[in-house]
Image (cartoon, rainbow, N blue to C red; front, side, top):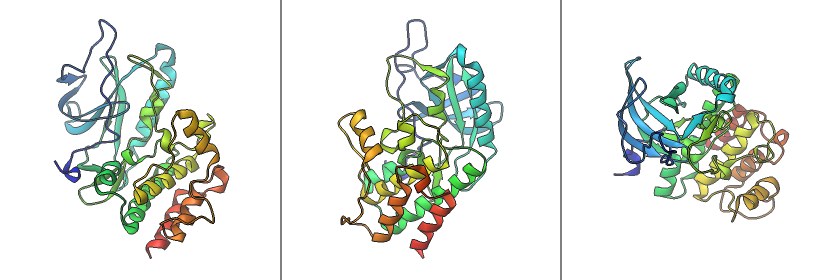
Length: 299
């Protein structure tokens, strides 16, 4: 099936790890129900779980249900409840370039995120299928992503996990931002079923995330600058043989060194450089300022 016609959802989840003896194992059997959700087709797999087309029997709506390979920690019940409140805050944010989050919870021992069902393909898949996007298309999609981010930031939420897999391109060609970083936040309140592994998006993490410092709206702007570079070049912004080497490059290596030639318009290089400055204070002040810089290029 063509990439553009695939049904994809918010950073589609990964195959479940084998659970301990006595716990449910969903790798070999397709579950038909999870709490008050009737599960349909398995739509995608990714780094945190799996995404199903599902029917919310209480609300009477068809949704994308991301079932995560995380099990809630009893010791983190209060933190989990704060996270659930953040998810409900996110559900109140409506924007044409956002995929809406309806709820976050636990059913039958598994964490889930209930989201709006969107037909389209991820930016990651589009670039893999087509190669580098024309500059104006890449700029437009990132400007639409920033419009969504501006609305999210106004609501007091930092996304935390901007990456090409979390930007959908719907059937009208619009960018739709997904996930709100909730999958990553669940790590703080849950434990992974099975062996240990790294969860996250290291290729698009800001220096302050690598250092374990507080995140801000400018953390999302850094990642969006990297996404723009990826859309324009079809190359990951930083690569390394290990997480340590990848971390070093994010912390110390400029993405586009000033004075060196690149096969991108100079104005675009200037915008990307500013968005991906190592120190948050040197980046754009807001998603709206970043978006306006891109719109100036479109004009």
